[in-house]
Length: 242
Image (cartoon, rainbow, N blue to C red; front, side, top):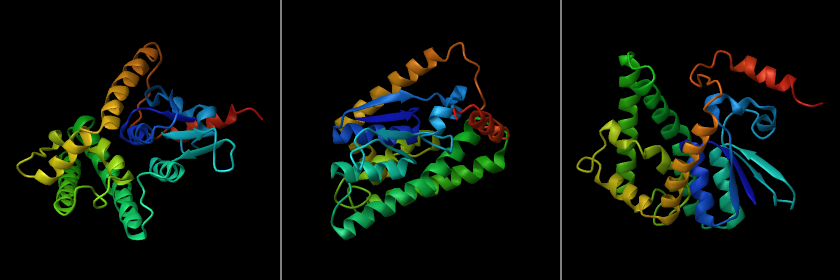
């Protein structure tokens, strides 16, 4: 059994899709980052970085309980546990890891910043231009890569595709259209046709609705204002049982 402690953000959905793809028994444990649940002592034991997602595997590498943080690392772990979506062939394996790390190092951070300045701080034109332009460049990298092969790592569907897809759902907001990015759009449509991805999208919507309802009377925090994160973290650590 895999417990996924998360919110259905792009990083959370990366793991959800993988779990649906490999068909392992799993359940979602809600961690509502909008009300600060990532700072609760029990979550910090799973992810000391006060982020999501984190997993608990009740049948870890030695047969016992094992916890992990960082979505990219979790995908590698689940791929090796299940023997799926990370090729054994050395060249194909390293191709998969290259494009997985491309998502972790570039797509996630840059798309996240673009979303932040487009939606939260709309009066900062310099930042909007910087991150929107960089996001468009990254979509071009994806389109160029996908002109050479069906999937990001080559001829096989891998964790690189799983990691990248949730971050690309908002491509239309950045002006990414089929006429200019045909190879990317073909890949995106192939992703959306996968049953596991369809199930993820339905689950993500249901989980968000459930979490919003559960948080109705709880005070929200500004997750974008991190100046008091150190104080929150210290407060949470001080309440941990000794």
